[in-house]
Amino acid sequence: HIISSARRLKVLALCNSYANNVQQFGNLSFAFPRVAAYIDREELDLLCGFGMTFFANTSEVTEIGYDLKTCSFIASAPLNDDTAVEFVYRAFELVSQLHKARIILGDVNPRNVLINWDSRSPLLVDLDSTQVGQFRCTGWSPEYIDPLVQLQGRNAVGGYTYSMEADVFSMACVLCEFLVGAHPYAVRVRPTL
Image 1: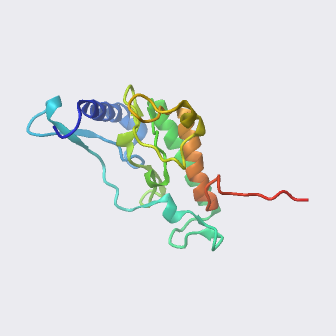
Image 2: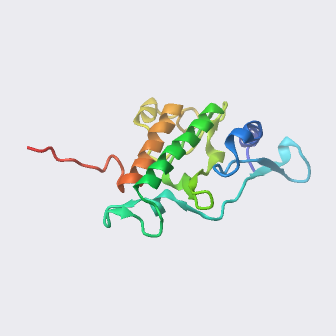
Image 3: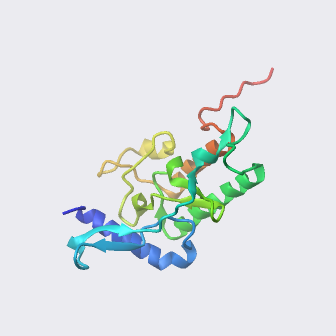
């Protein structure tokens, strides 16, 4: 078998969630599992993966964020303060859309928040690893994980159990880094005398 039975069921749950929420999700903001892929015929044991939309004209937020050395957004990205703040608001709206559909991102990190240059909007990718229904997210990025999630410890499958609040915390860390050029834990402030 190419993928485990639990993974097959999760793929089907994600494809069904996309089909049930496609009007809400749209097709320009999420690289979401859309259709299940099978070997030979449609049977659970023959499910081998999924198909999703490919977005060609994108960049990771690390490639377009604020550069502390030049005190501006990275030169190759035509962003200014206003467009960057608009990007942040739109990214949080996408997270809210997923939460309304009862989908939790889980492993939020800069590699799965992109800008779609065609629409000038945020794009969330790696959605096949989300937490949906009883299916957990098995990944984590230590530098962006909510400390409260870490305090709870790992679950029975060796990962963490995420919450909507944990998604907001992790996305805030990623987008803070995008806006100011440094991870929020790395910013040090000296008190004035």
